[in-house]
Amino acid sequence: MNKMERNIKEIISHFSIEGEFLDSEKNNTGHINDSYLIKTTSADHPGYFLQWINNYIFKDVNGLMNNIGTVTGHLAEKLAENPELDFKVLEIIPCTDGRKYYLDEQGQYWRLYRYIDHMHGYDFVENTNIAYEGGKAFGIFMSLLADLPADRLMEIIPDFHNMEKRLDTFEKSLKADHVDRVKVIPDEIEFIRRRTGQMLNIPALIKAGSLPKRITHNDTKFNNILFDAGEHAMCIVDLDTVMPGSILFDFGDAIRTGANTALEDEKDLSKVDINLPIYEAYTAGFIKSTLHTLTEVEIDNLAFSARFMTFIIGLRFLTDFIDGDPYFRTSYPEHNLDRAKVQFRLIEAMEREAEKMQAIVKQSVEKYRD
Image (tube, rainbow, N blue to C red; front, side, top):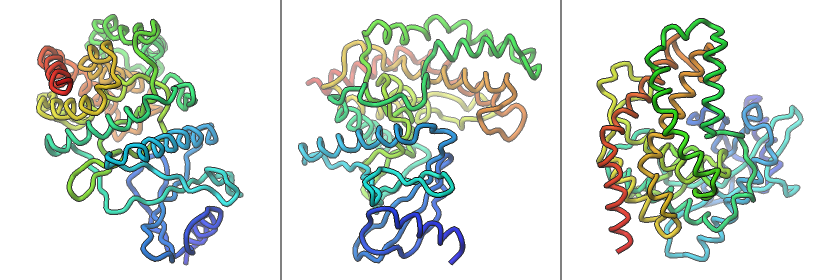
């Protein structure tokens, strides 16, 4: 048994587990937190999922775990009240002292979940059934949290989707031009400035109170959904960014990541387009699960939210390129610029299909209202 395994065994001893520690296996799917599958001597137990919490990214670990505990506790209560919903929720395993996380002698933070067995995920949306199930799953997640006041949670990453702040940072980066890159992006700068006005509509609606503040996931990639063997979406995971926000953030980002026909850093922009069948299927699943909680203003802006979220991510990629790539990991000098170009090309595709995208929302709303 190597030093890391001895450390894992010692860390696990501080949690209230069934049985005794037997073995650990490194899980390499995450990019922020290190994860391990833990096996114990308890018969017929699926094991546990241990995670090192990256407190360089998440400065307030106590606030982070309180958020997750509040959300998972509420979801568990709602699912108990609605047994007809075939859905699962992450279960935090507390420490022996009752806390939701363990702080080791090296100042490192750890948490433990009950492992959900016989599940798998997708990095790519393979078909419309997967898209529909994904939309339904995130919809169930949000609808079950609809009656939990957003102010019960803290803002883990301040201004995460704050368009005004992102635009202000962009303008400051243009002015500073620390690494002399502004001269190569005149088209991208013009692209942003032509659309700035319309992109400020959603922040204005939030400020006016027309868009309700809700508890949102804020990282609605498809690999944050667990599917069973029958390809039914069963659980939403990776709750680190759960905090107050707009439901438009979650819907829009799911479309941005799930309905793009190309990779995020595709250099051949002719491959970038909006996959309307995937969009339609996700929209149907999402609206079916959330329609009873959605306001008319939210419904009216669902289709546009895909452009909004694509714009804000493209803006962040371009700002990082201007600044010399301090935030997003890159493989070559123009990597963030290529990423920004893909986002902007996707926006253009969505603009061409805007009427169809709006009509798809309307059709789903009419279908499920009936």
